[in-house]
Length: 178
Ligand SMILES: [Ca+2]
Ligand SMILES: [Ca+2]
Ligand SMILES: [Ca+2]
Image (cartoon, helix red, strand yellow):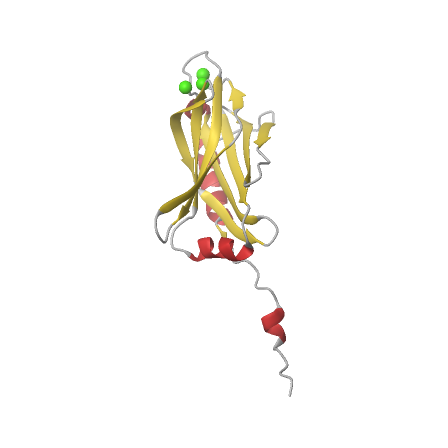
């Protein structure tokens, strides 16, 4: 006699995600409230690698009054199951920092970005978003009038064994921050 499979077993589990948008939004609201930010001309620059192993995007948006919103988004291409394993491990499997670029060489470590979203997707793999607001001086990697070039560096770590599985570097965004 045929055994009828329960329908739940045939439904692909949806990726569990961790959302920290609220936390980030509250932090941003507090920052904005404290410094009394006024609306400035909106300008954003974005660069995406579109690489085979992972797509890494860096966006820097001018908020006015010398402040910038820095966003890093990445999809590390892997199977849904593998991505879900990374998510289920303790700690954050993906971390992001912004570094100075001097003649194509990764130079100064400027600041880290908090993780605001982590998820597994059957099509894209392991995805994460990082977001922060910083004063322009944190992006001023070549002091004074020198033009600045910054890149995002994202590290994939298997937190079970504390092993680095990959390092991804974005294209540069140039500016004259101070
Ligand atoms: Ca530089
Ligand atoms: Ca530099
Ligand atoms: Ca500079």
